[in-house]
Length: 244
Image (cartoon, rainbow, N blue to C red; front, top):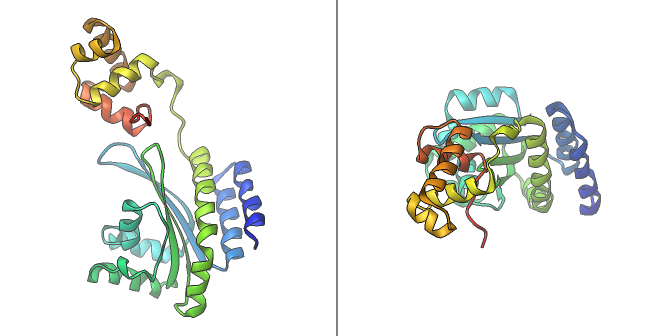
């Protein structure tokens, strides 16, 4: 499929209303690229030590059951690559196989019909990590050519898919939790390690007013100290580092 026509097909993600519709469109696009299987796994942090996992699944159920029962995610070289990079990786890349455990994960995947493939990381401004993978059951020259040819298509697809999954599957932050611009300014300064007095001097506010805004933000975020407020606001995307 020409990249222009492929891009037009991606616009269909904007019309999806359920995970089933997203999965069906992914299956169609996966088949059009010549792959046998696909998966998009989105890790959404609910805390710094906890996360919610959402999947658009076109992988064999038996493999996923085996994968999680063996805790292969701890040694999966694809997960490691995607956690640390923003570019796609083909599964035959020698940099993936750093030890015997990573090689074992990929060998066992091949035993379940996932022998060759390509994976694309998605790092969102909300702190999420998504991994989009496409796989085939062979490891020959044709499989290698297929994954190489698919690189620009997979990169293009990942962003549209991610937006659809977030829109359909993830809860929307309630309006009552929205921070004011002053609360955001104060929390960002707290994240920089500033005291209330220092924040007041920077923003032209009294120390008492700064404490008022910080306490309001803590109440909205349902936390009991400044550190937790910064952590929760960061995880939910309410505060972010300045782009300039």
